[in-house]
Image (cartoon, rainbow, N blue to C red; front, side, top):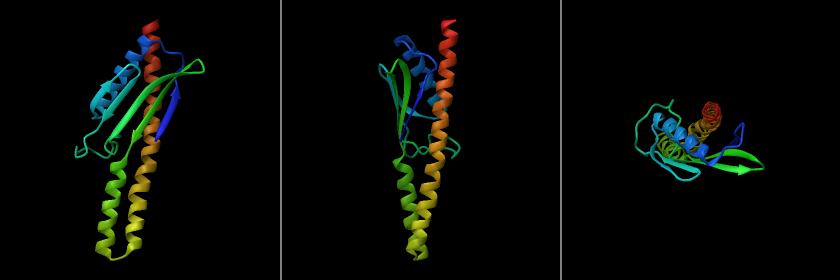
Length: 146
């Protein structure tokens, strides 16, 4: 999935470092692993077997990419994230349910419920997280410029 949000003001290259370092710290608090910062991009990965509460937004995310780009005289933060393990886990659980119940429709229902509902919840949570990050970065940039 991919989301993007514009900053209040256009960022300069010095602001990129400030923004990406903030995102890195933010994600570290959310238990992200293997964070790499490049010029205008931050890439993080989460370990597959890392235990965590379901309230942690990154539990179902195995990889994410934040990129700052300039478009039409605005700075945008683009967030792309990958959640394949969510669907893999839901598929395995649905196979188990279908096998134990000997009803294929139970497996299909299980996959749609576990995979689909968790996916929908994750979409809202990741969008909210992106908006929160952009607001915080806007605040940091304003404070730096004052």
